[in-house]
Image (cartoon, rainbow, N blue to C red; front, side):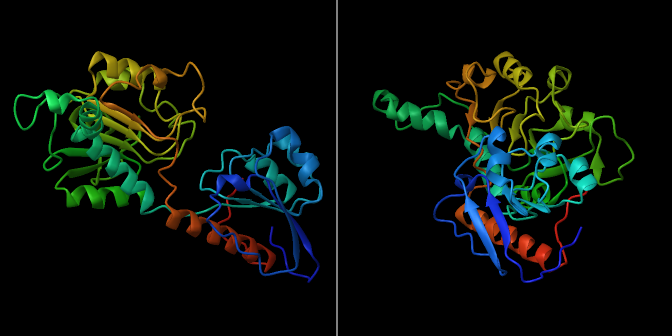
Length: 327
């Protein structure tokens, strides 16, 4: 539902400003407004803080149907991210609430992080660094040592699950390294055309598999025990997309069993990673890397996100909403 600027002041509440770094500027919207910013907001505090809001900005604070029902003045939700699974889109549609998200802001930062993880694993950079720090080089009998495997990316097969802007950007970087890029169909989906490789072949023929698809019912636990059993070439498995795309216990089991050569993740199903999570059991393995959901977080990318977020709000108030997510 579009809004038209009447000149009246509109109240905006930013529920989790600390999800954006301090050095990123969130410019004021181009209309009369008041704004309240909170560093973080618990779900149970949303109604008390945003009861008078016409516009809510949220990155990770969920807005479910019962919360939306208690916010009668709410007309627009500006999601400071691409993913909108924290929002009950059906309830928003029923209430005439416009939801806008951020698009194509991370086309450099996520692919670069992805390639950084692939390179770190393929060159065993982390374990070699740690071994030097532990004094191993001083003990070597010659100028170098070969404690950890290294392999070139040139000529290797990269299986990309997800052919959106991020998957395609990763493909361009990988091709520059001489990799053979193949886009995967989804599990159980055929007939996507000659440019796509069947999911089962991606599993069996890839040297590296990287995830760049959204989290949906059809992609949840896309890689599980059965899929790891099909990985004949013992690939590296990379996930900079969404937690939940990979069965995390199954990945740890595959890593320990040597069914995959290594894994690097920037996301987990529950964030921050909780006590008892399977990944914490393999943090000391030389072929495992976990980064704290920062693939998206270059300063350039986050500034672009903040600018686009305000553009979305301005467009809504001007009566021409953009980047609208349907319910």
